[in-house]
Picture 1 (tube, helix red, strand yellow):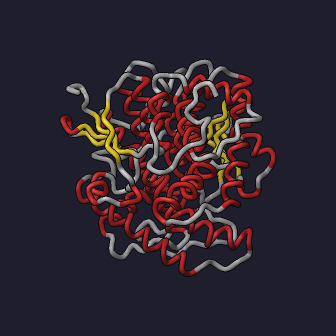
Picture 2 (cartoon, rainbow over the protein chains, first blue to last red):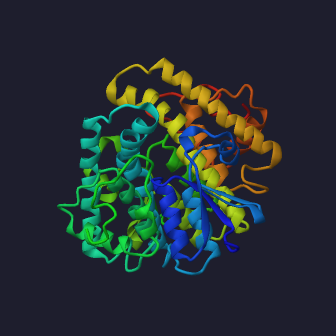
Picture 3 (cartoon, rainbow over the protein chains, first blue to last red):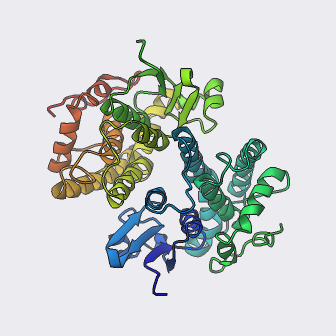
Length: 227
Length: 227
């Protein structure tokens, strides 16, 4: 473990930490996981990041603290040449960043965040059952995004164009957490399912699929790379 | 107007459009305003941006459509050398992007978004009075962020370091909209007020301060560059 110098503060179904982990793996950068439940407001963590959010990536030897998943991704894009993920001419880079924002902000607000609230926080923190009406609404909204992924994959091999990019990593990270929490109905989404199954079998993605979030279990198809 | 080729879809108190306008002005890029109320879900706008959010920046002559305020800022940072706003070594650039995210995401979610809901949408759309309890809570939360600005300005001339950066533009954009909507109490924030008043007198900022949002009027100190 002598080469590990980055420490990633995260929990297994944090979608933003997943995006960073996919990027680090694709770029061949080693890191160690530090388990952090941001909803516990741990004092040392608040000192590290006043916004109290994961992921945070630290390099104690070099005195670096990186905060915010997009800032972290841009940092490694700028400092590591291997496997560029924000690539091509400026308009293509803008398209990649548009799709990253669509999944990080809109998909997260409509789908991932309510699922984390209903299926994770209500179980672990509030000890309440999930609200069935909210769950049905998130599945309906997730469906609209999968329609959009189908549409993109009808026109391009990857979400933002001809090569894999940060847009694919951001989308797969959000969708994988929604899938873990039972929010994805794949049945009507041939193209999206094809795109996602290619992803699932990548060495960067497979470790994520075997991790479990405490007492919360994913559906049986979740970790199956052939599903 | 022969040189105007960019069209910015926005409304006067959209904080993300303000950030883009500050950046375009600082970089000397001309643009024309197109008024867009995203809550009206205008069909042509939804065709342009399925996420139905402002700002959208188009260049019809060159067939370019830019969506998402951070993607737009990165685009002009990459294509226009004048007045770099994401500057310095990679760790400094990461610090700039951390602060942009803090204001675009956290400040917006805690302060600007509830103020827009209570003071703008309830007036223009729902015809309801604002909820006083929510307004008091946003002012309290805004105060925490101003404390943080005070702290940063105690240590640095600008929010992210020794030069003006996109962090300053993002923060000023959010704070100016919150100020317009009566959400800012400047009385205990000497450093933040000094930083903001330097901003207010810049040529990039002054036009924003004279624009009004339909029937919603700002407090008297809002547009006063000496306040």
